[in-house]
Length: 226
Image 1: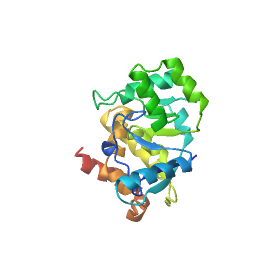
Image 2: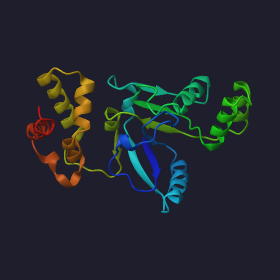
Image 3: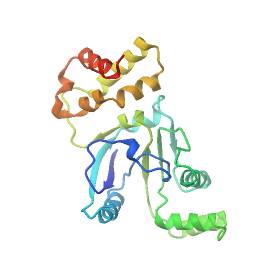
Image 4: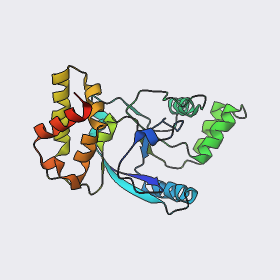
């Protein structure tokens, strides 16, 4: 699936620590399958930053929805479960993540929807009235939130090219970490995908992917002081 991210600058690397909290699905990197939606957001955020907005295109590997190592939550439409989850994450009493999902997909609570949510929270309308107003003026929207480093391996920037499959190298190295240090898959995955070694491996210009995986693995061990 081709997906898009609207921002004030082109995205070359994703740093989840810089992502805002208290958004629809919590802290994470957001994309949409609707290019127009990304363009509209890019225009808004561009004006805020006194620049021209940019849309970055990615390929999302939908196999992620069936990947056992990923915890996924999907909302096919606006509904009570989606509504409760949005309210949970937009609660600004704390900036801590309110869930432990890797990837979340569903409709967007844009400015119009958010105003209706605020009216509900302030007791001005009931839950039933909220959904009645929402269905009167339905607007197609879509977003996928990548909440963990592990989930980001399912997202690749468009036109990224490599001589060999970096995902295969990554799988070998994660498996080697698990075997050598007796750690669980999640810990091993997080260690590798958050490392400088992986960032260099993902950089086509570095040519690191041309090296033997053992050499890359040894670089990682030195970096992590293992």
